Length: 212
Image 1 (cartoon, rainbow, N blue to C red):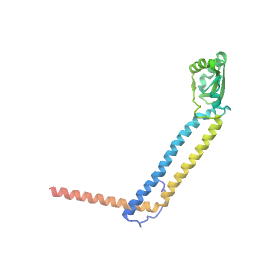
Image 2 (cartoon, one colour):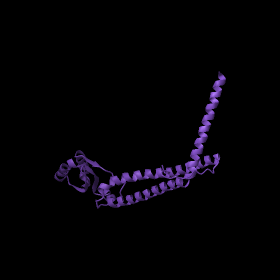
Image 3 (tube, one colour):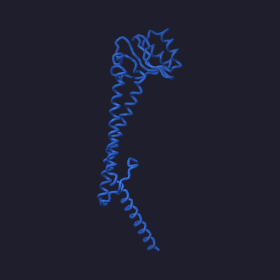
Image 4 (cartoon, one colour):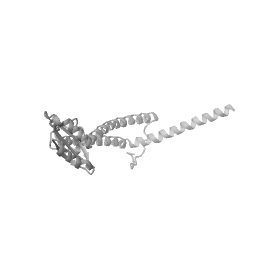
């Protein structure tokens, strides 16, 4: 497909053996590039997953690493469905000594975190779980503020995309550079293959005639 639109004249200067060597070498060169692309694409998938987790918390101006290591308090981060949030908020303010910090909202969820004293952490966790609060582990993803972590990951993603684009361009350049030889090799090897198949068929027919 990378040669689509290209009208290169076939290079007929190669011998059959040279054509085979050329095709094999080109194949392995392209496979090496594609293996690198595949590896980078896996890294990209992981980065995108992390960005999706952090994105709703970007507005929190809070060092999460420090918040999760509070000595006398516990911090939990996650989301609650929008339909349950009013009940969640009302219960928290009426029954628990906890502070909820909202980060963002979508049509389906309210994202944020609550901070509660150590002595009430167990009670708060049980209550919030019953109120459909879903915990989201940010500790392994964020070192500092969510906004800073998001920006750093977004920069890594941009660098990865740049590397992937360069490798794709390298492969396209390799194919276009050798377009004439590729076309000639394809045509000639197909001819040889067809001729070989005809000879095999003829030999088989002659053998069968001898049996009779």
